[in-house]
Length: 160
Length: 247
Image 1 (tube, one colour):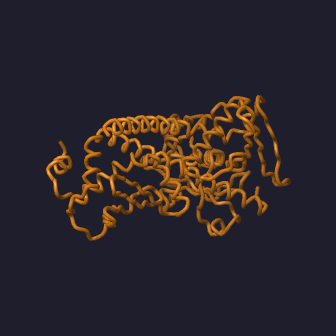
Image 2: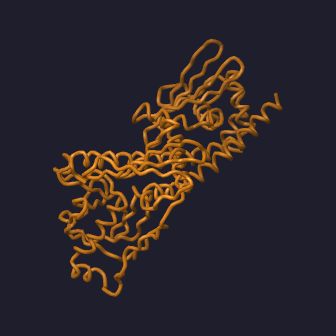
């Protein structure tokens, strides 16, 4: 059993925020397994892409928002929790409490993660591989397009 | 893959003066994005993976040269100031290396590499079929559309433009088994030359070679993605079923 698993099992009242983010990173791939939406967003935002994953349960939701650089490097992660008409946001880079009180929606998320940990982790790893390939294809695609545009410009100027 | 002797050495001292007869391109060899290879610095072309935009070239120490950049003289500000600014395509790469071969001082090469070790044919061109079946071309186009889908590029379902160097393929998918390719050749004396092909005809391979080369370079990646996606979907469905049954 990993340290994370042990902590999740032992803690009834509190959850480490870092653990919550880690779980959401894994669960998020399943909740929105159309991970390509992140690359679609890339076109809209230019250099920075954003992707959000939401875990919805009874009377609440947990959303993971991630910001990436164009090359796929993770810039920032934050978790938004909406429960009992209350909205809380915890950014990885911000000043947050290390431990937060475990709410019903968090319990639901942890239960889901614990139960499907095997396939969830596998999906996460596969999605990561796909992501790497997509990034490579994207770079080649953009380079080729730029190459063509330069040649087209040269042609217009009379250089063949 | 192109067969190249890993010990073949090139002296790029005259490279800046080298002109490709067709494209008038001076070539710049870079150690990395910031440092240009120094004149007379020996380079070893140990392996050249046939990928249009990612030629893998290493120097004599085995360090990779990340890119080969070209500047078209007088074409733009970067060219005028001698700044390398875009990556070669495979044909340009061929022609420039052929020039390097011709213009390299044989004495210098002998100094670095014993003559008996030098290959007689450093570049072996891939043999291409005479014609390509349009079904294969359609596969290549579908692969391109798959890339657009992956990248979230919006494209009309009726017409799709594909850009390959000097070529623009305008593809009209009229019905699943009927496809026409309009190839636009940007000739100096003409705005565009159009050639149309419709299934079940074949198309001269030379006319679709850039497209087919591109297809061959990405097909393995696409197969991988497809395999991974299938497994993701299977696992995802299994989780959903299990979850539903539990509720």
